[in-house]
Amino acid sequence: MTPVHRDELWIGGAWVPPESSERIGVENPYTEEVFGHVPAGTAEDVNLAVSAARAALPGWANLPAAERGAALGRLHRALAARADEIARIVGLELGTPLKIAKAVQAGLPLTVLAGYAELAAQPWAEETIGNSLVVHEPVGVIGAITPWNYPLHQVIAKVGAALAAGNTVVLKPSEMTPLVAFLLADAAAEADLPPGILNLVSGTGPVVGAAIAGHPDIDMVSFTGSTATGRAISHAAADRVARVSLELGGKSANVILEGADLVKAVKVGVGNAFLNSGQTCTAWTRMLVHRVHYDEAVELAAKTAAGYTLGDPFDPATRLGPLASAVQRDRVRGFIERASARLVAGGLDAPVPATGHFVAPTVFADVDPDSELAQEEIFGPVLSIIGFDSDDEAVAIANNSRYGLAGAVWGSDERALAVARRLRTGAVDVNGGAFNPFAPFGGYKQSGIGRELGAYGLAEFQQVKAIQQ
Ligand code: NAD
Image 1 (cartoon, rainbow, N blue to C red):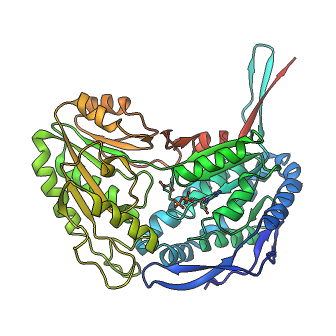
Image 2 (spheres, rainbow, N blue to C red):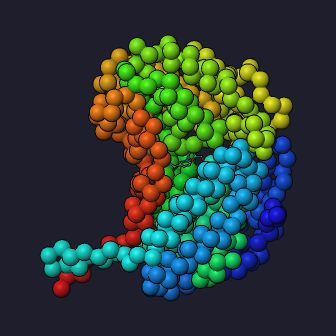
């Protein structure tokens, strides 16, 4: 079994001792016990990692595509061999129920990485525009900073795309869920990747994250996390005009039109809102329902929420795990406490397991679209239901948000598609359309800048050059 005490950093193709002997403890949010640790990296460790990434860049960028693809294929195989361990580690450090951890926390990044191994093997497209030859090149050394809620997926969305596009990477995973990224470094070691193309420096945001964001020799910072941190990283990178891509928060709407398949729309909608205990940036946390279906939808949503089994992430009966930390739980409880809408399921007095940072699945009806509940990203299992009378009103309420990451529409195909086109978000699922890990993923408005996943995600890590002849 993988060690959960990690004392070294992966830099330049070797495990190296960190500059400082300080460690960051990793808590199991179900048992509330610290069960592992990682090095608390420093700016000096970041310098070392950036030097290694810079030194590795020309070799990796100029490798024939087939060889880059083969290297990423080896990385994928080494990581796939660790799939059960990935699910176990994410279950321990984040509290995701094991079944979901296997499918989403392990399965999804493996699918994404396999796609990038294939894309890496294809030569970068070139095109002729008049007398210009347009070519693509890597951006350079990439700083990747990731959050805790999908700790391997968010890493692979950056690392897979950046490496496929010929860049080299310095990665800082979240200090709350850092252990799974060490499994990626183990896989990189086993896959015999060229030294220095992938470097891992664990540590806190204000120390390692800030050192990456402000590093003069990092060409681009790719960040996933909160809007507030995204803003700070943009400021730091602006001083040297470094490229920044941001995947930030969301407050997505699930729009249920008149005549929709109500039972399916509500069940899928509640499942989406509470996936990963609501700690999902794309979660459909606002359910907008046409008035003709409103009362039935509220009743159904409340009943569905009340049917969730909370408990040990490693118990197969568990559908909802704890929140990632005590801080996150208290933050979510604060939103519930301040809410002035009609509570129809869950709430602060609903029973939860004796240990673990739990919040009961909570549903509010008659939510004011301008209220804190409907405007702020709560990042917990809290669903707000809002009524509307027309498609126009539904679109106006859905777009009444400073975020624009995802969303859903249910109704007759043509009408639902027409509403989907009017939503100002980076993605919309119509009548239960499945998540596509190769489609562009990213936000409008304060949900971010740029796109991840698939060919669009790869293009984010490329420069475009015009050669006139
Ligand atoms: P966060 O912004 O606190 O932290 C994210 C990462 O940034 C962590 O690695 C952290 O150490 C680092 N960081 C913190 N301060 C920093 C600083 N000053 N400089 C540089 N790095 C710093 O976010 P979180 O709490 O880990 O994650 C939750 C948030 O992430 C939610 O708002 C959620 O919506 C968002 N999120 C967005 C997406 C997306 O793709 N759009 C995906 C997942 C999560």
